[in-house]
Amino acid sequence: MSVPYEPVNVPALNLRAQYQTIRDEIEPVVRQVLETQGFVMGPEVSSLEAEISEYVGAAHSVGCASGTDALLLPLMAIDLAPGEEVVTTPYTFFATGGSIWRTGARPVFVDIEPDTYNIDPAKIEAAITPRTRAIIPVHLYGQTADMAPIREIADRHGLMVLEDAAQAIGAAYHGARAGTLGTAAAFSFYPSKNLGGFGDGGMVSTDDPVLAHRMARLRVHGMEPKYHHHEVGLNSRLDALQAAVLRVKLRHLDDWTTARREVADRYRSLFASHGLDELVKLPVERPGNFHVYNQFVVRVPGSIRDEFREFLVGRRIGTEIYYPIPLHLQVCFASLGYKLGDFPNSEAAARETIALPIYPELSEEEQRYVVGSMRKFLHEHAYASLSTDHRAA
Ligand SMILES: *Cc1c(COP(=O)(O)O)cnc(C)c1O
Image 1 (cartoon, rainbow, N blue to C red):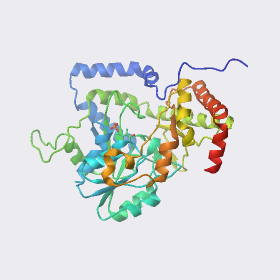
Image 2: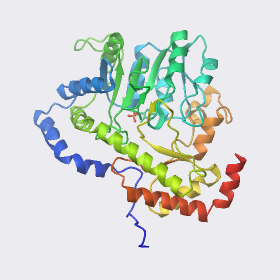
Image 3: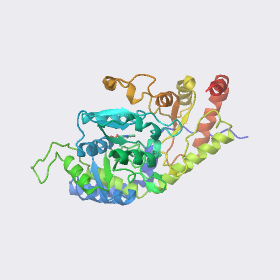
Image 4: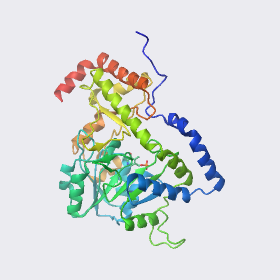
């Protein structure tokens, strides 16, 4: 046997690898924006809005400054107010809860399904009150939430469904893309997302022309026409440079998604061939779902997770913990009155999950090194405690 291949390092995310493949397409469009010196909104942004609408299959898209604002704008556009409530999951990036809070309304949390990490539709009904205005399902890690029952509940109670699709551009649910599964959908162009810009950016998609118009006005201080302010909005515009970059990247998105799904498949077969698929819980892709693997998140016993992560650091393998503290336990939300134990599935996920390196350019050798390293740790350092933990669980 030859010496096993050991890459210099395998970062959790490698944006430079992707940039190298598209540098020649990016540089001219950036130069063109520099020549025009038109930096905020403008034709690049309008073109990107049209292209995203076409890509997701929605009638309208409104570009804005971040994924966070893409959640905030639709909530402002339904005049969400203090005293009202929005149902969402506590196991998500902070922005989901933060955007609700910013309107003065109250986030009401509902636990997740333990296998997909998405909001559990069976638990939503009990969280609805006469003050509920909307539900925000998060398509976590690139897989859509179980939208049919969510829509049914929302329709019955007259609620808006706002998809948090920040991690899920291109994902689909029974053939329909994220962005068409609710009243409106928020996308993020943060660099680590599947369609990432060279800075912050976001977009809201919707089929509702009235909502789209209101959001387009809210993103420019409620202004229409110039210097006439109908309401107090945000300064949340999208930059031309970001739009120009994103338009180039959008042309590659489907190929990158295919590559991400191949990386995920290879992880599955490597885990199986090393006999680790019993010890390490792999992502579950539900029938009918098209997962776009913004993250490949596995689960190990909480008692060894941090040691495991340190071991991988020693082997120059980057990982990430999404998300170590669920929203109901965040200090800033203490006044909501939640406590440890309220959402056991979210709390367990926060203790046990670890995101492995995934990006379209990740090579098979690198994946072999990652899984081989995991095997080394699990067998040599923690096998005994692991197998008992798992049997007890
Ligand atoms: C990234 C993300 C956001 C916010 O996007 P920003 O562009 O960083 O503001 C919201 N929700 C989820 C689930 C995200 O992953």
